[in-house]
Amino acid sequence: MALTTTQLYQNELRKLVQIEIERLLEPMANGYVESIEEYKHLAGRIAGLKAAAELMDEADRICAEKYR
Image (cartoon, rainbow, N blue to C red; front, side):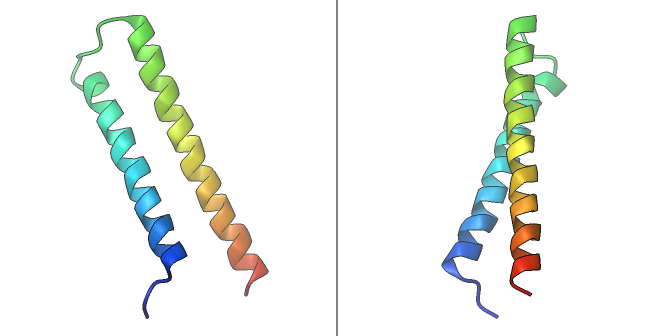
C-alpha cells in the first residue's frame, strides 16, 4: 500500500522531531553544557519537542477514531 503525501509528511516530521531531540540531548549526555542557563534552554526545547510529538500522536488517534 502506497503512502499518501500527508502520511509521508507526517512520517518525515516525526523523524525530524526525533532527530532534533537526539541532537539536543547529545551535549547534555556528554557533559558539554557550559552553564545552568544553557542546560535549562536545552531541556526546555526538548520538552517542547516531546510535547509536540505527543500532540501529533493524539491527532493520529483522533483521526483514526473519526475515520474508522
